[in-house]
Image (cartoon, rainbow, N blue to C red):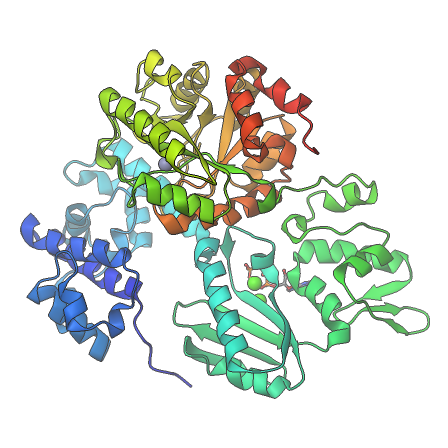
Length: 593
Ligand code: DGT
Ligand code: CA
Ligand code: CA
Ligand code: ZN
């Protein structure tokens, strides 16, 4: 069973991006290719559905002339674009696939295809590994090895979907299902999504209902369903338009807690719990706990009750990975994990002064709306030329604008800041006196990301030794599924962070999630303190805090280790404390009051 698929904005954008790539590979003029990439960009920012937009609405969009408008219409009506299909057919296979790899532009992809017959990621990897790839013009060993690094990290990731895509989609599906059928209770996601892993294989949904068959019918006929893999009386499996697979099980109320525990996983955590149950004469299953001698089934009203039956406190889903949580829980020493409610301010944001899309005032209002009490405005520094980084003079004006707006607004406090490039040699992108003026200085690696581990580590350490640099932002620079992390000695950086009083950022942007869970856990052990930053470039991105909270919780992070859990006044005190004494300030602060 297949329903006809309605194109989403991202599908249109994808087609135009692909056209731009193919035209560039073919050697068409920049003028012509740019029209398509600009159209793709414009679509990325739209607030309405392109598939159902009127011609009038389309023509109002920047760069939407006849050529683009008719193509949008053809795509919306037929689901296909003849121009694109013909173009793809004329070009060597694999160009689009290979240009997805960072470091491989359309021209290189074309040469690789024509001269070396490279038509896939796998062929590209083989060609680099054999050294053949370096026979192409302008491909040095260093360039080739860098591409290989990206290639390997991409391949190892397989077909999993980033949580930033999976979670909103799961929420849309749940709300569509609630609307489509009456009498659904406890509708929830289990599996890796509930544990907040950074990528998701498939989505495991559970609910209870009076009429399971009506729920199955509604689920398998949701408008976003592409294929129904199986449909049963209480369990169905579908693939959505996005390609994500969803399972839904209808569970009797009395078995719900046990089933939720089972399907939340992880598998390894579940195995440990079942061992524990066995030692207590119980066999834990999806329905409850069966007494091994009497065969009698004990049922549970909540996950808490099951843990309690196993002589454990409740263990939050994010840390159910069998990495020591059960032993610690047994000793009553589980940490109190940070929550979104603990976070008072956002320490990383951009406006239209640089590469943000909204004015300072719009961003401030949105941050307030999202529940933040303070916001640091951290536009880019002068070397970030692609992002329109601010000169020293502009930075002074920016500071003034932040202070003016802070006076004007109520309900949110603004602080001055910068997201400053850490230059290739570890030096600062602004003079010290300009940095000293700012409330908060973030330092970021945005250039020369292919330095070797020793150079990169020394670069970051040298930046942390500057007394004006408060926070290292998105330390590893990875972009999930797109760009591999830089090479660095993480432990060495953590040690210097502690020595110098520098914070490491947990960047909550869905593209980055950097630091990630394993880093955070290690850094927690090494005594590091953190900041949370949404890195918002648009007003709707402040809510992405939740993804960083997921990562932080997976990293066993507690609120007392995150500086922006401090109320505004205490945060100002923190900032006015000399950098080497700031960790001590956090340690002595009474986080409970
Ligand atoms: P994913 O989908 O790859 O992102 O990861 P999960 O954790 O969602 O795994 P999935 O969808 O295969 O299964 C969902 C949960 O069901 C899993 O976290 C634990 C439970 N589960 C699945 N297979 C097994 C199994 O063979 N043994 C046990 N004990 N539990 C399992
Ligand atoms: Ca799953
Ligand atoms: Ca599954
Ligand atoms: Zn940023």
